[in-house]
Amino acid sequence: MKKRSVTYYLIGGKILGREENGEYFLNRGSGWFRDTQCAILDRLVGYDSGEPADSPYGIGSLSIMDEIKEIPEQEAMEHLKKTHRPTPVQRRQNMNVSKNIRALRDKRGWTQEKLAESMGVSFQAVSSWERGEYLPDAEKLIRLAELFEVSLSALTSERPSLETTDALYDWEHMKTYVKTTAKALGLSDTACAVDFAAKAHEGQTRKRSDVPYLYHPLNLACHALALGIADDGILAACLLHDVIEDCGKQADDLPVGERARELVRLLTCKKADGADRERILDAYYAGIASDPEAALIKCLDRCNNLTTMAWGLSRDKIYRMIRETERYYPPLLDLLKVTPEYNNAAWLLKYQIGSMLDIYKRLL
Image (cartoon, rainbow, N blue to C red; front, side, top):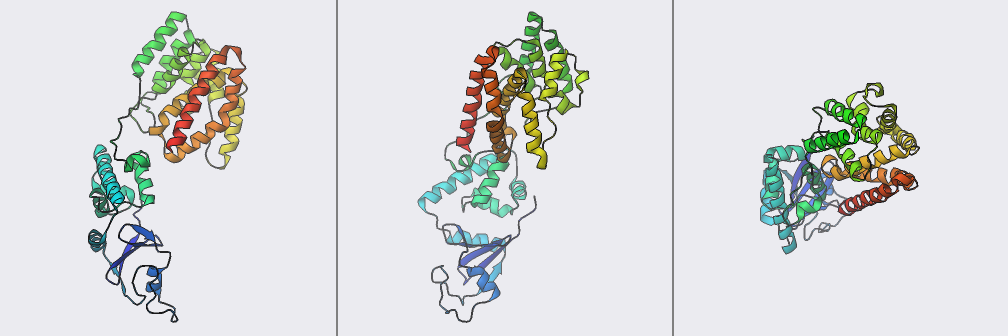
């Protein structure tokens, strides 16, 4: 990340200011505030000759004639230490933020220099945050939350962070369960699909984790079985739904019957970025909405993706996933609801998807 351009100023020997990428801020003892009165800029470029010499410009008793000088960052940090006067609430917040930044940085094995480089600030600034001398501004708090992949409340709360896990189940156990079930029920396509998917996804992991990618298609198959769905074509398509899109396979390569292949074709989406994204997704979901079994698999897929997107996606992509789900999935669930063999599954999938969306929206 490109380092931010920051210049510090001292006005009248007592008021600290800073310019950051063309924006000006003043420090009033309890924190940084935008220089809405142009106290810094007016002193840098000159003044209106008609302006009274004792004009305070909204910063206490500071005179417009007080000199302004550029100072190095280290001197600015020392000045902050001497003049910062946080309120009791701010002192408590500072302690929470400093403790949490240090804990999150240590958890990742990062040095202050590495965090500073990622944030585009000096390591002295990071050190000041961790000592609780002053808080990062709102923009930097958001950036810190994104870097550490936590919520803003996790940065500011005095409650200890809760432990999380990337995977609830062991993928090897799921693989054994699906293969054993396929053999017991005589599901030949499913049995072949397990091994084909394992080989196709070998070496791949879920986003931002060490969890093998195979965990995802196995989760879909286990979810379907838990709903009482033991259709050979559906289970095989659950296992193979990403191999064309992510593994470079062709439908004719799949060791399954034509029904499973057709489902995988329907579930394969072209890359949908840029200006064509909406058009591509509209056509993709319209195709899925024409087939109840494809709709069922896609809803199972979305359930699993919603459960893992907290650690796999950025906040912006989580927001996009929520909006996409709200737009495209109600018609799929409605199709399942009017399909007798999937009516019960529709009720549960609607609850699972809806409740996860509600939780994410509240936390965002």
